[in-house]
Length: 277
Image (tube, rainbow, N blue to C red; front, side, top):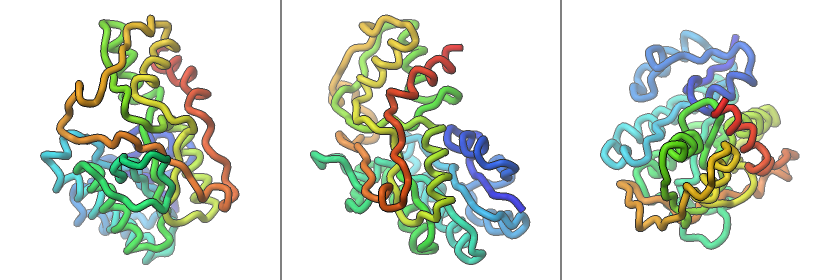
C-alpha cells in the first residue's frame, strides 16, 4: 500500500517523490488528468493510502486558448481525485496558485481573501479548489507562487541561459514570492502529516519582482547583472493578464504549529549552482 503522486516528473512532483518513499508516481500514459473517466478505475486498482496531486496544466498563456482543457486538468479531475480520497478516507493534497487573485490588493493575500482570477489559468485553478473542497472538506489545498528549481525548466533557468547569450528585459511591476520546489514539497508534506486541511498558503518569504529575481539569479551565476534591465508589464504584452500583486501570506501556519518557509534568497545560490553545474 503506497501513496500516489500525480505529476511526479514535474518540479513539485519530483521533490515530493524524494520525500515520500515508495510512492506510486505513474506517467500520463497510465493516469492522465485530461481524461477524468480513467481516474477512478486507476485508483480502484491501486488503492493508494494518500493522494498528492502535483499534476497540473501550467501553460498560463496557452490556457487562454485551451481553457476547457485547463479546467478539465486543474478543475474537474482534481474534484474526482478529492472525491475518491474522501470516500476511502485517505489524505488528499493538491496545489493551487497565487493567480486565483486579481492582483489589485495593496497588501499580501491571506488564505481567506476572496478569489477573483483574471486569466483562464487562474480560473481553472480556482475551479479545482472549489471542486476539491466540495467533494472533500478534509482536502488540503496548498496555494503557492512562482515555483523555481535547480532541476527543471523554469523562470530562473531560462533567465540564466538567455543572459549568457544576450541582454534582456524583465518586468519589474509584478510582485510575488519565488518558491523553491524542495522547500515547498517539504512544507506541504509536513502540513499533510500534521493533519492540516482547507486552504494553506506556502511560499518562500520575501516579496520581489520578476526583474529583481532575474538579476539575483544572474549574479549568482557569475554573469554581469547589467545584462538584465527592468521593463513594465505594458512593454511586454502577453495573451494572459498577470496580477500586479500576487504576494501570498499565511495566517494559518502559526495556529497549525508549522514553521514558515525560509526566504527565497537563502536557497537561490544553491539552486543556481545546480542549474549551472
